[in-house]
Picture 1 (cartoon, helix red, strand yellow):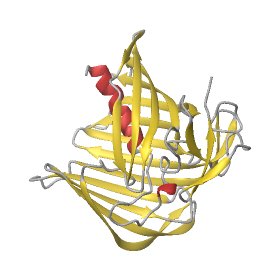
Picture 2 (picture 1 turned 45 degrees about the horizontal axis):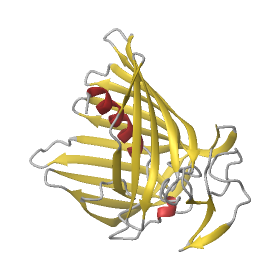
Picture 3 (picture 1 turned 90 degrees about the vertical axis):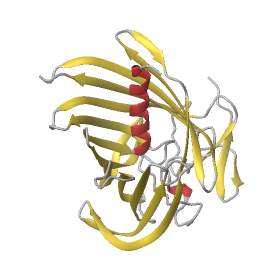
Picture 4 (picture 1 turned 60 degrees about the vertical axis):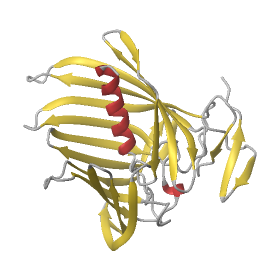
Length: 301
């Protein structure tokens, strides 16, 4: 994979992490519902298309390179334990387009790789304050082990208030090292904020994420709409080096979403979009699939 493809994949993976899924390890604890996850709410075939513009800055803060990444993320499958995404990206730089190798991403609903041995437990209960209101949360602690590292995630879950995950702290420690390899804190800063997506206004959550590692810090502000596939509809990011200098910055926006080209089933959100070509119109045939109400429709252009 060339450097440009690796750069595109890095931003794609970062966006997936910052979705802030609100699941614990369903395979071991069943403490949380997939319906509270921005992909778990939908059935296979749901997809989103995003456009990310990234700028690399020199020591004087001048833009020395600009890349534009188009990313299509499609939900391939899901069950009570995990979900699987297909990520397809293309990068445009200096007038040339490069296609990255499609990636298959399989994760649990607490956003850990599915092949990691993980356990989730109820650690405690705590109240978090957002917009001067306090929300009672279950604090869930997930510990995942691999051959080289340990991941500890603490999720503050409020089961009655969107976006359900009010805060999430993730620490990655490499075996044999005392200092953490990375630390990430994601927390809601505003609830029920109006945000217009492709001509329709939705209730959105604003989320701030700070990712720290030895080489620097990445700060991200995200807008999440749970009624849309993938959740994240807008995102701004700045990457700082170890001295605090901004070396890269990016903006991402959702440009389209809906069905795949074949017949799929997508779970109806509480306020379905009205734009032609998006997921489905309010009046569509629905049926029960397990404990979900889903709507069937063939997507075509």
